Image (cartoon, rainbow, N blue to C red):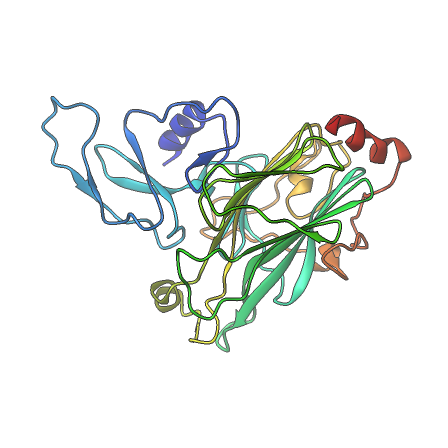
Length: 321
């Protein structure tokens, strides 16, 4: 897998989520790879070389990443996007740090945790979850993000959904207390009249968006449910009362300071040393008490850096202009 990962990293200098690239311009996929999109599993496809007479592959995404994965031809091996791209969080929150290594951060259901905290940017994530009585922890997923920059607040959440419907938008967004309304069509865009450079663009007709603050961050988000199959495989215990709609998320940051912290943020520091067992099947990032925030917009986690310098706060506004 290490060889495949090097190939993919060399071919993609970009974060990808829900079939949309974050960086511009969008590079071509390697000729021997294919992406599975939601709702298009179990599909057959041929490798690009028509002369090799290979039988078309028929594959499914790994249970760790049921909503999207990559398949390499002609081996038909599948890989999760989170296995390759820095700044991503998928499923029972599995992050890919800036060093390229995967780790789990389980947190706790119904609590907020600071994911990134810098002088001019702070991002909290709200976790939802289910308790498995046979385990000592909750199954958790990221249900919402609270983003602070300068004196602004941006909220993005997956609405609670009893019965999931792929055609219904379950995405809620609010900027400085005002709801953001965007037509449910691919490519539709909202632009802030208060903060130049702050935009939200539909990456799919429903449930998928890219949030961008020019020169500061890009957030790719896709609302996905816990399916009956996911629940059966992992013993999540999902009932008909809640599909546990949550986010698969990709982050890209520009010019973070070397003092940045947070569950994901501290992996971007130049002095970051990965002390996790990278050979473990499930390396877990501990220290949850250091990252607990009292609210989705609170900057009171123990490792908070937000607002430490006035220059840092002003910097965001100048970048956006």
